Length: 296
Ligand code: NDP
Image (cartoon, rainbow, N blue to C red; front, side, top):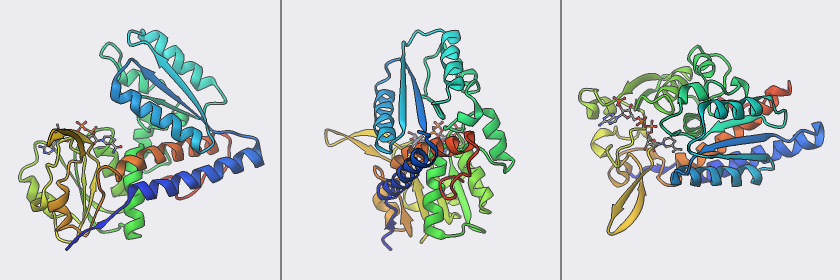
């Protein structure tokens, strides 16, 4: 079997086009321009690239983009003051604090200072609780992107066995919550899981969010299953830096029914879902009816 490639790049372009259309309508019909504020502390090269890409995508869909580049040695108090100002700014509907933060800052405190209604990353403890109890919340972008692709592929996910490898607050746990909410039978695996390959072979849907290059090989995969590769790892191969996922593409694609590639799978969906979340936040903050299909 050769797996169908789930084209995250094309899917994300579709989501962005949908968002752009509704941004235009909001402007024309309500005089509202959705705005996303991104807070970057310090000079982490990878974070700078992410922030630059987010800015470009935000502008491209017609939203307002507010970038706050702060010195690496900013005090906790001053950073919280920036967030307070963004919380109070009616032109800002989404706030994203680029992680990781420098070590002297308390990430949890900072994340929980963001107004939950503007928390487009879905990391605020209120949104985590709402998601966990099946209530309307802001949903973390990467798992939301994975869910959108899975729903598109299957229609209904009810009754499918899903295995999520990784239990981080950013990816693994919210992914498991979303799959559970769509009535999958969910297993969360992690570094202490016994016989991981056997656990994974039970999956109709296998989500890899481990951060270990090409760890999931064909031996971990049930024939015909769907494999979502969240991993983004930079490795050196043949003297060149290459981007690979947590899944060994060639051996897994030979067994799976469908697979997301790296690059061009989950990555573009994460940015598209950030824009979708900003639009959703804008609808909710203005008391408008949000769009189905762009939220979980
Ligand atoms: P974390 O490092 O926070 O979590 C990794 C998880 O993998 C942990 O739960 C860990 O288990 C588990 N793990 C580590 N080693 C093993 C192993 N040998 N066997 C089984 N489980 C293992 O990573 P993130 O969740 O933040 O990110 C995961 C990957 O996704 C990374 O490659 C990251 O770059 C990528 N990513 C991609 C995004 C995108 O837009 N595509 C967005 C966010 C992340 P334990 O808890 O026991 O330590």
